[in-house]
Length: 265
Image (cartoon, rainbow, N blue to C red; front, side):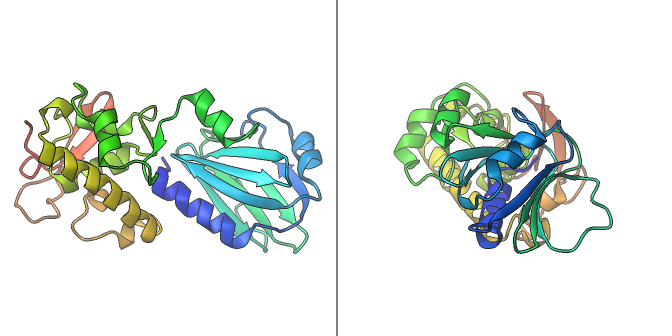
C-alpha cells in the first residue's frame, strides 16, 4: 500500500507536471473510485480550472482545483498517478483522467479498487474528521512531542508506528524498515524501550522516511542494508549477520524482521 514516501513522491510528481494546466475535461471510467460524486459532476466542477496546489498528510494527497474545489486522493493498495500524452496500449487501470488543454492528461490508476477520490471542504477539516495524528515528517514532530505521543505505551512497536490516529503516514512496509534499522523487535512493547532506544527509534523513523522520499521510494534504489527489498522469509539478513529473515503476524499484520539483529525485549 502506498505509504508516506510513495504519496510524497506522487505529490512532487503532480507539482512538477500538472499544476497550472487548464483542465479541458474529466473522465471517470470507474464510478467505484468516485467517493461522493459522479463523472459529470467532476467534469462540471473542474472544466476550465487549473490544479493550483497540492498538500499531503500521512497517506492522503490533497489537490486544490481553482480556488474552491479540494479533492482528497487515497491510493489504496495499488494506486498511482501518471502524466501522459500518448494513449496507452493497456489503460484498463486508468480510473479517473484529467485532460489538459496542452493535450496531456493526468491519470489516477488503480489495479485494485481500494483507493478513491473524494471532494472535501479542505485538508484541515478532513484530517480532523478522520482523527489523523500528526504527519510523521512534520517538523513539529520532534523528540519531545514523540515522547508525549508514544513513549510508555503498552502496545507493540510495530502496531504503534502504524497507528494513524497517533502519527500518520507509516504502514506495514516502512514500519518493518524502521524497526529493522533501529534493531527493535516488532513485538517489543513501547514501555520496554529505555530513553536511548526510544530516541534511536524516533531518529530512525525520520531518517528512513526521508531517505525513501529522496530515492523516490524505488526498492531497487534502496540501500543494500535495508530489509524492504528482501521482505521474504528465509532471505539472508542484509546486515550479513548470518541469520535469515522471519515473518510473523503482529496485531494481525505481517511483520518481517531479523531475529538476531532484532532481539525481543
